[in-house]
Each structure stands twice: as C-alpha cells, then as structure tokens.
Amino acid sequence: MYKTPNQHRRGLIMAKYDVTPTGVERTFAANEFIVSKTDTKGRLLYINKTFMEIADYTEGELHNQPHSIIRHPDMPRGVFKLLWDRIESGKEIFAYVMNMTKFGDHYWVIAHVTPSYDAKGKHCGYHSNRRVPSKSALNVIKPIYKEMLSIEASSRKDGPSDSVAYLQSLLDEKGVSYDEFIFGL
Image (cartoon, rainbow, N blue to C red; front, side, top):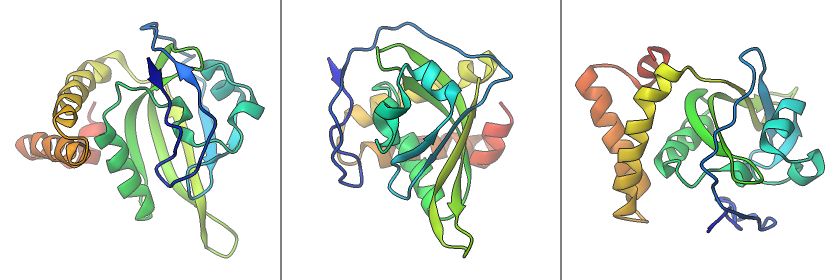
C-alpha cells in the first residue's frame, strides 16, 4: 500500500493519507487548466476548481498541504529533483507528471511551474498551470520514466541524481536541451 509522504521534503509535517493506486486513468478536458499556487516550501495556497475535481479533494483538504499530497508512487523522484532545482534557481520548467487522486486513480499533466514574486520583487512561492498532455508525448515519456524508476530503485540516496543523469545522457545523445526535448514532444 502506498502512503503519500507524511513529511514534505522541506520537513513540514502533514496529514497522512492511505492511498492504493487503482490503475484507473482519469482525464480532464483539453480546454481546462489545473491551477495552483504554493508558498516557497510547496504548501498549497490556491487551488482551482479543476484541480479539486480531478484530484477528488476539497479546498479544505488541500489548503496548506504540500503539493506532494497528489504525488503518484510511479513518478521518478528525479523529475521532482529536476523541477525543484530549476524553480529554486528562479527558472521556469515544463514537465510531464503523473499525479494521483485522493482515491488512487491517476492523471497525467504537462505542468508549467514558475517562481512567484511579491510587489517588492521578493520570491514568495510558485505558480503552476497544468494541461492534458498529448498521447504521443506520453508514449515517449512513459518508457523514460520507467527506466528512471528502475535506476532509482537501486539507490534510495543517489537514485534521483542518477536518474537525472540518465535523462541528461538521453538528451546529450539527441543533441538537445531539456526544454528543447519537452517542447518537441
């Protein structure tokens, strides 16, 4: 049985939810966006209606919880390492992510995550918009993520870094940057 993390990567304690992945894929309309805003530690401050509907959570259940509450166990940790490295350095990122609903179903998104700044220019959190990804893009991403998960299984400590190195080696072979690869899918 998978349990969503009871401790966020920044050390914040959150409620524990027991969730078993069902293998059932859900989707949302191509013209809809999932939107969320977090503080600098990744705690949810704003969740739109589409987010709540697809994830099966209420606003009260999500507010002030780590965004990782919807993390699916089949997502490579290396993808989140890459994501956090980019956004903490002030850069945006686009990434394919499989999330998990409150009841264990899953849904894929193409996420655009950006740092947010207050009126004085101080970094105050993150903003993310997510859309339904194309099937052709997922046909490319899924085998890469499967290999990344396999790499991560060999080492809890070094797995995420090793899986990012694997991804980088694929990009080097193709002669493209991460962004070029993602935008080309």
